[in-house]
Picture 1: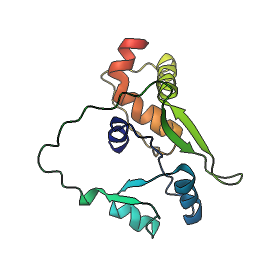
Picture 2: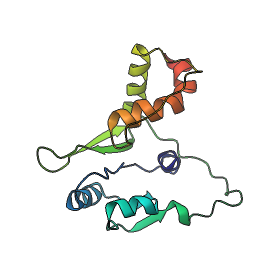
Picture 3: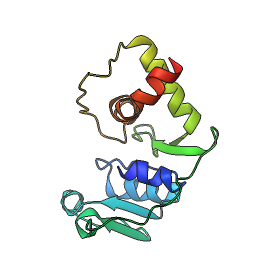
Picture 4: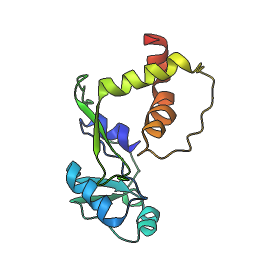
Length: 153
């Protein structure tokens, strides 16, 4: 939901790998220019520290009472940057892989071309969002299937 909200605001997301060492995670935050981290206190307790970032938003601190003011969502172009996924850093520092909105839609269409997904299927995602398959196939494909599945495949 945080990714969808970020895209509605015209932002680029950077899913953070909570298995990285402290200095590696901070490198990703600094290298990508992350200015806001959306998290929960149990995740910070798992890390054992608070990453250095301009804004740290804990979900348990957000008041979800009432109706938010409606806004017009951003309408990104195909070539606008949607996400930066970082490698695990096994061969040095983690490297940022930049994916546009068109890249993501293309990956979803490619998956639908080889995996027979039906609208009444139930999917269980067991990979984290910082993993390309976890983000694209196990999260975004089910969320967008109704639109992309019928309209483009």
